[in-house]
Image (cartoon, rainbow, N blue to C red; front, side, top):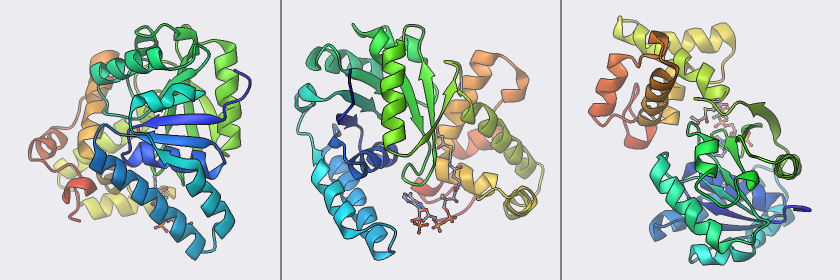
Length: 282
Ligand code: 3HC
């Protein structure tokens, strides 16, 4: 792969839409697909609205915003990805749906095209193994909100080639993101450290400390932009629980045990900001 010019993004949720936005803004031909037509529409509308806001705030000139819109289009089906140099998957965080998607796009894409997953937790080596091109497969884990956060964690599977890794490094540089190389293990770097910290904050809530006191302590005492409980609501309590369960299961240590209060909130449907209620009400 000489240079990645056209990218297909699968999944138009918060992460997928954010990824498509930064790619199109950097001038890559970007195709966004979602199996749900309303989700695709919502994702595209969100991108257009954020580009508009950036111009209004004077953070982006009108020509760049216009170019981004022109470089972005909706894919009617996965077959539209046939000429893409790279596919970035940002769908539901479960192995089987991701594997099914990769099996399908593997058949559609050119043999030299690269497959990437924005998974926050699933083994890259395991997903790569369902395709005919494990050497052209790797993890690209963006942070939420994608247009704002500087970092992308890159994860090489057992068989990821140097050429694939270099092509993705160049792509990340072109969208002005900073990369770090993580191991293909549970939680990579950020979630391995972040999720146990948030879990500890939830244990403190369970022991009777007020969420606002915990958040203020971490914001004012350690200069975190958001307190851990606000961040938990922002990331989604269901997502947080899923990652903690994975760390607990795969690393096998008590220190990763999800706080029972977190389990209870998720059981109640309190999934954070997206559901209107978590540690705070929205
Ligand atoms: N999409 C796009 N842009 C957004 C946004 C979103 N969802 N939310 C906020 N922004 C932009 C705003 O438009 C604003 O842009 P501007 O400076 O150009 O005007 C900028 O971000 C700052 O926003 P605000 O002034 O409204 O609010 P804050 O100053 O509080 O910043 C924040 C918001 C950037 C989200 C900041 O609070 C922050 O950095 N929080 C921590 C986020 C974090 O830790 N993310 C990583 C989570 S872990 C993860 O993603 C891994 C996953 O696997 C779980």
